[in-house]
Image: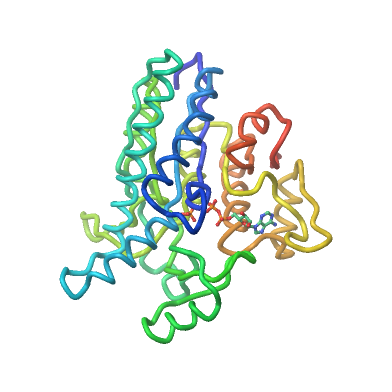
Length: 315
Ligand SMILES: Nc1ncnc2c1ncn2[C@@H]1O[C@H](COP(=O)(O)OP(=O)(O)O)[C@@H](O)[C@H]1O
Ligand SMILES: NC(=O)OP(=O)(O)O
C-alpha cells in the first residue's frame, strides 16, 4: 500500500446511484456517479486512496426486466452475465467520471475498473430464500400482479415500497483480490466488486457462473479485509443509522460499539435486505482486523471521515 496515502474502501449503494426512482435513464445515473466522483476526488486531494465498490440492485433489475421483455425475439440472459453487464457499465461511468474530476483538480492518478468475480457456496441456504431487492420500487398491487403473472418473488423493502427479490448468497472469496491489491499498491484508484462481484462457484478446477446477486456491502467488507485497509465506508441514501427507523421514536446514532451494533441487529432494529447487511458487513470487517466502519450518505462522506457525521462503528 502506498505509504503516503491512506487506503479506504468506499462502498456506494445501488439506490444511492439513482437520483430519482422515477427517472432511471443512463444520463441520470451518470449524473449521480459524477456527483459521487466529485466527493471521492476531494478525498484523493486530501491524501486518501479510495477503492470504490458499488451496488447494482436497481440496475441489474432493470436489465433483467429488459431481457425478459425482449424474450420473444432474443435469447434469455443469465443473472451472472447481467451482473457483469452492470459491473462493466457502472465501472465505466465511475472510471470516466473520476478521471474527469481528478483532471479538473490537476491530479494525475491511474483509474481502473476491474471485472471482479466473487465465489459463493452453491449450498448456501440463500438460494432457497431470495432476499436481494432488484429493480424498481412498486406498489403492493403491482408486485402481487408480477408474482401472479411472472412468478416473481417480491417483498416490501424498508418502508419504501415493494420490490422483486433474487437469491443473494454470501461472498466467500474474491478472485481478483491480488490484482486489486497490486493496482492499489502502485497508486492506482480502483473500482472493484461492482454489484458484490459476479457470482461464480468452483467446480473441480473451474469457475462456473451462478445466477444470483451478491450483497455489495458483504463483498466490500471481504475485499477491505483482504486488502488490509483500516476504514470501510458504506455510502447509502441516509446520513446515519437509526434506531426505531421510520417511527415517531426514530433516533440517529453517531457511534456504536461492535457489541451495541450486534445487540441492535439481534433486536431487529435494522431493515432486512437494506440496513441489516450493512451492519453485518461492518461487524465482519471489524472482526477481521478493520478499525473503523462508517455508514453515511455520499453528501456527508467527507464530514464522516473527519468524525463529524455519519454513524461510526468501532471496537
Ligand atoms: N435502522 C435503519 N436506519 C437507517 N436506515 C434504515 C434502517 N433500516 C432500514 N433502513 C433503510 O435502509 C436503506 C439502505 O439500504 P439500501 O437502500 O438497500 O442500500 P443501498 O444504498 O446499498 O442500495 C436506507 O436508505 C433506509 O431506507
Ligand atoms: N449488489 C448490491 O448489493 O446492490 P445494492 O447496493 O443496489 O443493493
